[in-house]
Image (cartoon, rainbow over all chains, first blue to last red; front, side, top):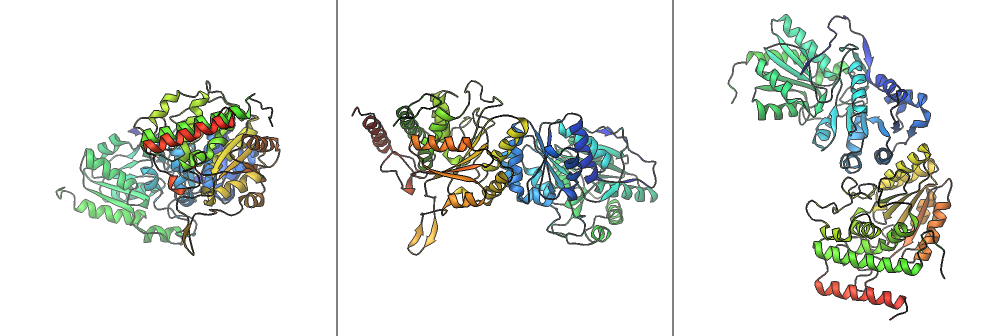
Length: 328
Length: 292
């Protein structure tokens, strides 16, 4: 676990859209010498692969609305030493391409970066067809693939620099809308390392992706009620940081997980597996409750699907009220 | 008629290699007690011709960057690929005895991670052409002058991904990409028809379908090395269109009691069947060579 370089001072926080940082960082990596190619499923102006297409048109390959072929083409390019980054929505890349990724990317271990834009349920009012509530679970179960969900633009930049040279197939979970910046520019990202953003011994909130911003808000609300909640941000869901999770559980003895994803098989599932084996601890999983989403404004979705900071605050108070009940 | 080939090998020499390959395929499946037979025997001559006369490859340097690429998209014919790679010198022929065994490099379906010489892992049907498109695109982008060959089964071109790849390959004018269809017309189970099930024509008129996607097409006899070589010449000469070679083949080719019989899709021969098959292959070779 590392004490991170978190920006706790700037209020209000600046907002940054992960997709734009993604497009810009691809350009920067390539300018610095990375043998990048970007393959797009006719969504470049949504995923912001168009930023890269403008900088490096000869390294940008439009594949049309044919995502399965796109995954295979990426595998072929990877055998020649290119690092292909795939541009489409998480819902399509992780479900429709699952067999292609399994056979020609994960099994041979080819260095392809599967970048799922528009992950989770905040997808710009597109509804359940375009939302992905199960992508972490499926990719976590796929052998040989790293799974990474950054919290903000700063972390995404740092994470892309790390995964660009990992040589491993990677699923990078991205979001559509601008989200608050919580990390400073000096942040160092290491694959597999969780970040303790806030210390506390009453409750340990373990979160991933942009849900971490709401987890921090929950912790601030709890602090006003006199409860100190730790916030452990887990950007790498696989390989997961076992030591950091166990340490937070050791200190707080009560855990709440939070993710913009199903509670089945995602971060909550991963943390339950870790604690079940290493340190049985009372815990509550916050996330999508085994159902698909729908279209709607972000605030309404967060409220209805139980992801808002206020909702988490309420669940945390209930959990704290029951603290001390025996763990079976 | 004798063609001048780049390898210097005569048609008779290639025929002999085909017989040797078929015999080893049968022996390996017999030894392993598992594996496919019909498909490997139908694709044998295509693979022999490519590896012994066409592909610029070096078994001593199997990952040479400018080598020609070969993807066996119909990965269940793996034993045919392994046999040809062994005969070509990629690994000892004796290793064929490990086919399908635990810890073997010769997995049931080809694995590029374990076996040098395998350019792409395959096995889930319909996926091999897309990596071929990636290799051809990458070759052009890198300025490497190699050709990418992808062998497709006629059953697997029922998969939609094949046609996604076809559309993309013609869109990018990949003249350095060739698909070879092993058109043996005999799927594993088939389609409902008036009289029960039929295995005829898993896909109708494939040449017209490839042509509709912007590919050049050529038909050949997939068991005749002169016909195969002529088709490969034509494919390599292409500049701005990918080529689809419709290789007319017979499932189980070379052994009379296995030919065109779906039962031999994946059946292990008995000792007697193996002996009979090898005797027939050997006798045909002697006849062809005029020494019987």
